[in-house]
Image (cartoon, rainbow, N blue to C red; front, side, top):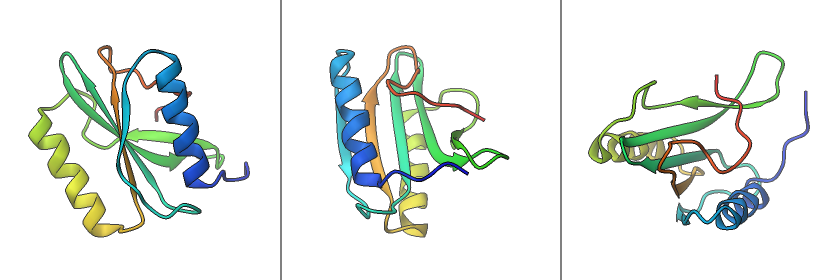
Length: 110
């Protein structure tokens, strides 16, 4: 199993990578700086996708499309985020402008 990076450090890295790629990013909600989970909201031309932090079968960092395989309307993405935040108050929520719905950070999507 790979070591975990503190959530606050990972968030700073993701926002910086997005900035470097010329894509606006925002921290919508700060979670626990050490061990909070992360949701990444990708806003694109076709709608939104919410990625939820996970681990693959070998314990490596990965992402799951929390809102399903197809883009959804903004209201559905926001409802998903709200439900997850109610379940986990330590959750970070990031938003990325991603016209192609591809995250600006390295992401293995399972």
